[in-house]
Length: 182
Image 1 (cartoon, rainbow, N blue to C red):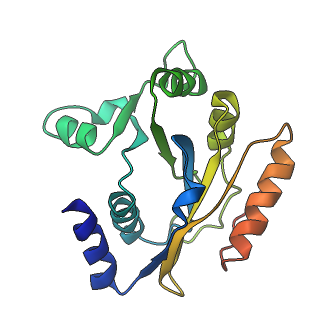
Image 2: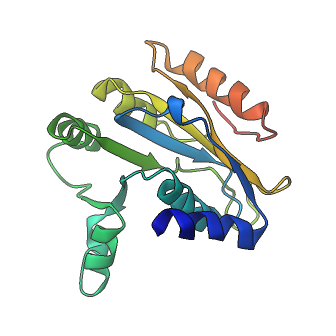
Image 3: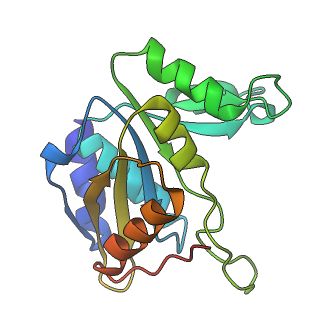
């Protein structure tokens, strides 16, 4: 039923998707570009339902209160304590190590300009988590100009952050998506 709902969302919005399921693994960090509207989140959730992926995402712990708490938990939210003595990378590595299957979805900050301001280079926490957890980075995309989305590739973090960012930038450019790196 969830798979049908996911496919229906794509059909209703006029978007199409492309996925090679062999790209996916049991444990991975999934990132996505380009973030142009809130529709991106809906399409991403639909894609995860189509792929039958149980996903998790980082959300500040302050939001896990009242009626929002069970909803965030159901959607795979992981409360993050930014004031914890353990950094977020360490917290995520522990979760990867404790689970046989684990899909961490991260929308890197600075993926869209706010209030007309110039886009900033993407934040690299996703890379540090994937590197420390020894898992691949799955590249997901949403191109509002073509109304196409999907999963385009995966990379395994090397020992060279800048080289990996340049590769990610190049792979997204092949799909008409420009990401800014340092």
